[in-house]
Image 1 (cartoon, rainbow, N blue to C red):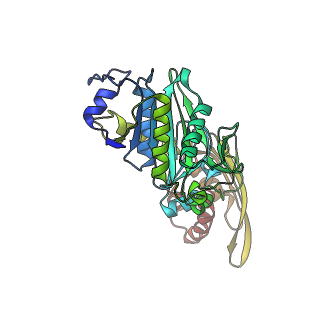
Image 2: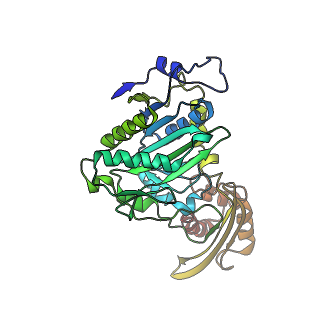
Image 3: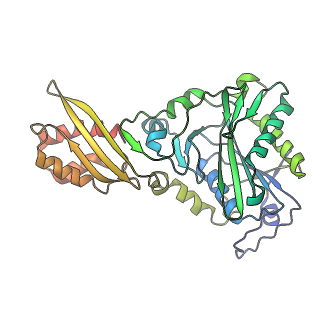
Length: 372
């Protein structure tokens, strides 16, 4: 049964370790089951951080259920250029987010359920959480063949991945979150989780591709609503808490003081792209100019999302060495992102009056944008 998670309830049930001016008091006797009213990936990830940072979980674990509008979520130590098709995502308006936990890249939409288990560090147990989800699934459909793997994934019929896992372990608290594919757009999933970028070398954590399947494809009664209710019921029974799903608004500063600053940080270029582990791009492509194919070589070193070294090599008769050197130097310090690095402006600053050069640079820019 859904009940509104009112402001009054929140102040009664939550406890803040930092002891803010409001002075929260936790009168809940055991755990809580929460569900987000928001479908914004940044707000929901911010709620995870807020709970992890502020809630006293001793003897009072929390289950958090949430869904997002189309978005791609990468792990804390991943490289977005290696993990997804950024150009396609920009065209389709699909958000990119970097979470604070490790693990691989996942695609979210309203057909994907996100489940977060919050506990103290000593009670952290990913396998036990996955077994809880399996029991919930079998309670709804006893014929489902769902098993957990050593990598803490859930497989349907022994071969199709329906859930992936990631976690964050703090000094005293921890959370384990996982996905559950119910009715996700699998075409969109496979399209955006396929990087088209060539020549990237990085030590970032890379995702392992897997065959996936929706639970709804196995049984049309397995809707997101049915599954969330089943997981909540199983969680309530296992942890001996009231079987109520408390609805929360992640944008409410009155309930979650400081939440909007967490959202802004998760939305920032510095967090999403700037936290990418150092990498380089070494690639070659051709441009057609006056019915002639010219070979262009590009080597770029990127640190903290910004260009540290840039070496664009082109035939001297097409782009003179002196001009190339000036252009390469102009890139240093720029963000490695076509929406941030204004390639045309770089040339205008370097060679403001050379129309012929501008034409060549425009051709080159289109190619360079393809690797950003």
